[in-house]
Amino acid sequence: TEIMNCTSHGVTNGNGDRQHFLGCDIHDNAGAGYRQTFNATGVATIFEHCIFDTNSYGFQNTHTSGQKYYFFNCDFVDNTNDGIEFSGASAVIRLGIENCIFYGNGGYGVDLSDTLANNDGRCLVNRNNAYGSNTSGTRDLLSAGTADVALTADPFADKAGRNFALNT
Image 1 (cartoon, helix red, strand yellow):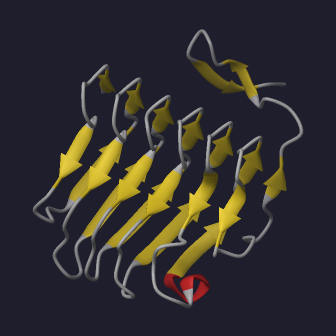
Image 2: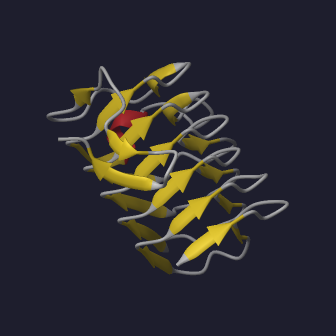
């Protein structure tokens, strides 16, 4: 599924519904590719094999209460601000990030700066992620994950042509 060229956010969830995104290409939106504005306790939102490219934020959460977010095999590329950003979130988020690439974002790859203390304890899975050329840095208030990779060059075959296969 392709979600593109929206004058605001690509997807906005304001009522805490359980969601599962598989193989979505969310790009070129004026706002965040996906923006969460409210959550119900214990609800999970899952992203697998999704691309968040050239949005204001790749994923942005402005309020949460007990929400769980899982990102598996996702790319966060060339977003104006952070790849993943939490602002105004409560202390009870649970986060999983595995096999994701954060490259060329205008902020951090992952920014948890506006959540409450002890962010590392809230990240249940944090492994095999790759970071490169993010203007503010790799991550904010999240420690390096297991087997993280520092990218020294563009990892994609042809970003401009929307080919996000890995370079060989």
